[in-house]
Length: 332
Image (cartoon, rainbow, N blue to C red):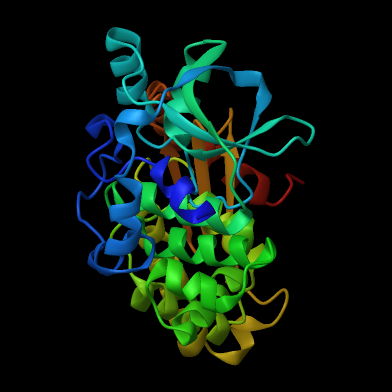
């Protein structure tokens, strides 16, 4: 009876603002639409009692985040939603549950609406206050996810990891994501290999499926590349997350291939030409450089002044002369 009451408090797939979906790669996840938290028994229940519900204004500073972080970047494409709410007001209430912890409420559905209102500096949000168990909140969260555009493979893997860490059983996670338990295990294994920091730096990588992530993991294992070595290879100046993934994939693949072809003498510490690939960012990521064997790549971010690249390019001949002067034998 509790589950029925809970799911009667949750909006169905049509109860949403279309501007709240992610703008990148608009493809739907068919497996979740067919089953999992979007199975007919949940969707039908979620549509009940729509006319009986009333929402209220909730203090934003009294709402804590969910333990199940299904989105890697809740701010992805948020500006459009911010503009929409600023112009038209909040059209769809959020859903919170009573937890009576450090803050009395926990967000269940409407993370992006809440983030947008915070960005606008609002102090209250329209929302429904419910009582529900952890599992019921997990299901309600899944209904919201099924109503938006594709959640990427790595975001779903992250959901599986976070749900496991929160104490959910693997069969609950399997049912929620509408996938087999072996696939849940594979997702968890992939996510834990790259670790939280690397995945967050790459981002949701929409359109990059399990096969490509597994290929990258295999390349990293073959090249004995761990998360601490992967992180510097991720280019923060690349705006699109899937492009960041592809850039990383190319670098790792090239590095592994180079190791396989390189003579053993070149791989020894201090051997000539054995230059380790390093990446650095400057001015909060506005500029980035990568040093590889016989290459130096400098990139300016979208918001950076490209004049710096002209400045460096114009002075390159003088830099070369200065370098050669350091190598010249001293005058007798």
